[in-house]
Length: 133
Image 1 (spheres, rainbow, N blue to C red):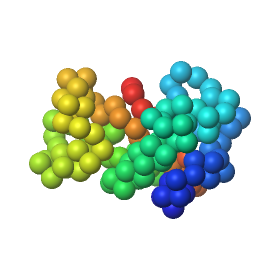
Image 2 (cartoon, rainbow, N blue to C red):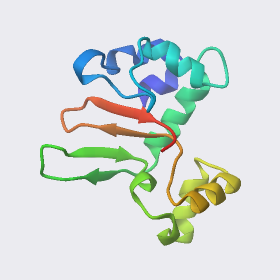
Image 3 (spheres, rainbow, N blue to C red):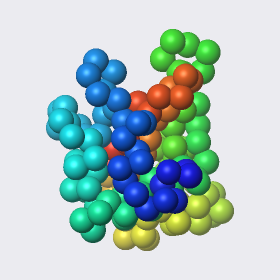
């Protein structure tokens, strides 16, 4: 979160793995330059918007997927692993801090949360930061 608050996307580089344990940034395959890829996803040329999204995602609650197994992963926001039709009104307020009401309606029709989410391994590695489904 500290890195995202700096507004300097290059400071994310140490957290973005390459090679065999590459941080997944796209469902479309491997990314050769993670920072340039993230800048390309941002609405501004410096990647500040994507840092703001990253910060908002991390400020949302998380969920532990497959606890106590070798596949354990911590997922932000917890909406990524929650049925949207089960959200309470207060949880919807949390969700609307990340997405608009129109986005929510699209997700409800789609059947799942499909905005940005990230996963961190128990040893602290950023496994993925993706959007879509």
